[in-house]
Image 1 (tube, rainbow, N blue to C red):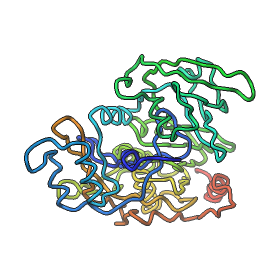
Image 2 (image 1 turned 180 degrees about the horizontal axis):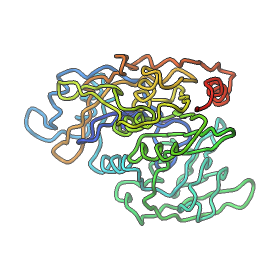
Image 3 (image 1 turned 180 degrees about the vertical axis):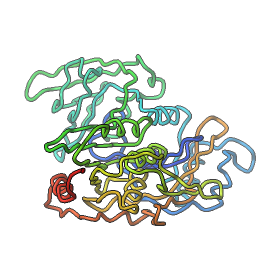
Length: 381
């Protein structure tokens, strides 16, 4: 899948968002109108010279242009640095609140180059227009979808400058199988992100899948484990990170207070702690892979360091740095790396990731392995 360096940095953002701490990587797999492209590799802290311009002005006192900001980020080697226009940052912040502007579909591109609908949100504009998973997306507007980078397809689903508002429209041409090509006009709306999925399995086991840590996720996980369960599988595979407060709150679902980790802030160190009163008795397995990033790695490391969970799957991504955003004179935002975060035992996943307690081989079904491990832990007394 094609992407520009700028969009890669934006997708891989990890920062302190004006009071809300964010540790986020990038979503992988099929992308929807709320999706993001794959992340670039992580990097160490940015040089002090770049930090000196974080106030958003050049030496002459003028606001930094987009090109100047991009040049500074590129010259610093800060691969996790990012520049956002005021509009882009507003949309990004909206996503952290668990909402996004779109038409309610995800798209993917196969090795044959065909762009197809991979998922449709129930009751969204796309579903109401009769679009279904598997439909081929032929055109978006007047342009052939297969000739556009998938990042551009996603951007157009969400809307270009001037279109990014509820009620704006996008026209798609879709085809189901060898059937008739159908043109549909969809109206963009604000949709709630669905970051938590709950499955009740056999023998009293509940599997909770968390895709990202946006506002309200910790409470959704808490609600999912309310009541008696024989065991819990917390599936963090492909989790792109998010609000660290939500990750710490999720840790508190399974811990009775205590440390979750720490990160650097304004020259000092801030300790993260879990709220008291969590369930420490129910057997817990955390399922991870190479797409488990940032805040999800922080949560995994905390539960692993404190011997609360058995971690199963593959080595995590290795995104352990923190960025600080600064508002520029024109309302844009420049994010620069300022340090790392650490698990309770003092480990940083930066560059190396976290090693699972029970690795899954390449040919092994990690989900099935997690259930076997959970069964070996016994049931809640």
